Figure 1 (cartoon, rainbow, N blue to C red):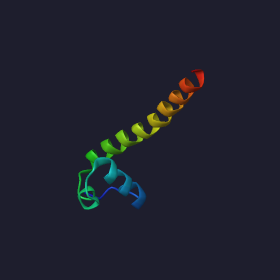
Figure 2: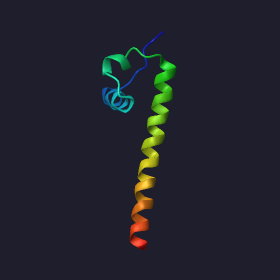
Figure 3: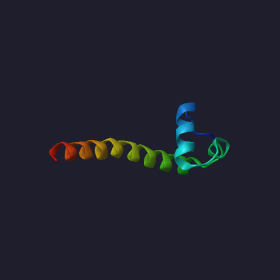
Length: 61
């Protein structure tokens, strides 16, 4: 089985998100990496939405 081609930046961000050492990340099965990448992407897209809704509520008050 081939390793999943990850950029260095993506690998570092994913390791920080998963709270595992980078060395462990490189030996994880591909299906787990894909699942965690999806979770990380979803969390990052929801983050700006939460911040913008909090800012709009502050402006209303």
